[in-house]
Length: 369
Length: 214
Ligand SMILES: [Zn+2]
Image (tube, rainbow over all chains, first blue to last red; front, side):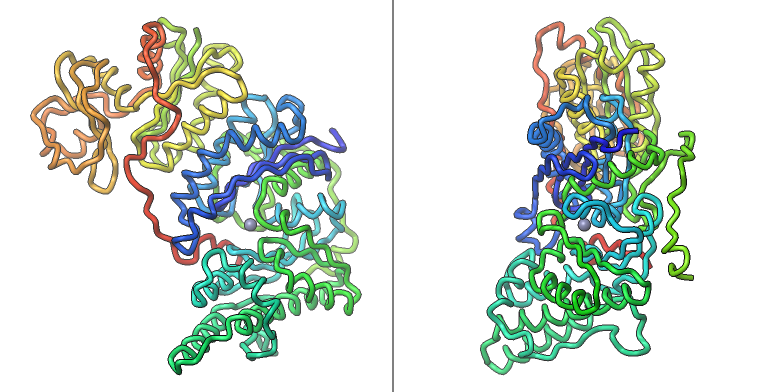
């Protein structure tokens, strides 16, 4: 099997149609078509609009990626696709395209997990992932702490949000402040000119009896909205920059605090941060500061690789090929709630390849009950 | 000529191979919820039954609907992707035309399929090859007729469509047969874009894509 497999990855779990091509851990192409502008006036991603846009963009985006990478479809060692989790109708377009593409080229198909892809993408930026990898995934759809002894076969959830995803909180606060959708980038920008200590917003689930690795952003969101409404009711001007900075600080404080704690508790000496919210400049800065203090090496991909893209799917697909993981079969389903514990969806009819099992000495002792 | 036809606009997941004269192989399953899982295996089945590989195909035929959205896109994206890889043309046909062609009814009739939400997708025909109205989506009572009505719409709404006829769902074999005739006659095809006939429900679901494990 090729050490540096050439793999094309397709991502359609939300509103980005992404097609990436990698060779091993080297990024060759990352083509993206986004329908985000169409969703803006609704204040969130409208599933049917996203699905329609994926269908229109699918084939042109594949062709653009191949051209960008300078490779032919027949050169590929495999096709990877996000099988889930995500929006059902949106996933179905990518999965159907990937099947047709793999079938027509007579190449193996790998249905892979979106969350595991968000972690694996860092290989394209910082080289092979350490094993185990501690990952904080934060986006509009997910906020979780994951421990991955083997990104192709063993991903374990340590904690997750019990209500809103971090990115969702950014969108909702941006809506209250009338800043438009998506909220992340604009709040990040305004917060730079505000005082993060101006208002003491609550830090959810940080009490001594609260679950150590779970998150909650719903209380924070309500508290910020109430604060803004009180100002408005009193006829005072809302200090938008200070609100943005103080809200953002509350989110990233909790995220980084819990992530660093998980690393220390589990004896993992580095932290990977991925997902759209990982593009937030304050999150990156505070994580860097706290990781350094704790002696943890921080790995955060560049912003373009943090948001949803095809390269991350290709990166995980390449790892599947390199480690001889069984391919998916032609009945592969789009699974909107694919559990994070399933990094890929092997076929039932294939003979399972018994390669050398990846043993992780470190992980055996200090990985959980 | 070797045409591969697929359609996922109705509850049937259907694929067929046609050599320009007749259907060489065909596979149809009715399962409205599993278009995504069933289509590629169906394509694989008809090709192996015919003993040919996909690259022997000279053209792709696809039913572009109208049809309920999610399943409809499976056939379209599959056809478009095959066309792109193989470098062969992809011919779009109205799914209702496939049903009309298969019915063989000489004389005026209507084709009506299930549009869900208590509506039908429908069009009028003067003969099996000639559609005389644009496909539309309406409530059965608003388009009730004494004329023969082909398709699942008649089965679902007998009070509006008393003279129901078969077939209930489209078959890729019929679509391919119609396409072969049209190709021979130099007739036009539809672009490979879906006939949704409805605007998207522009609603952001609460907690969209909350997928984190618990
Ligand atoms: Zn994501």
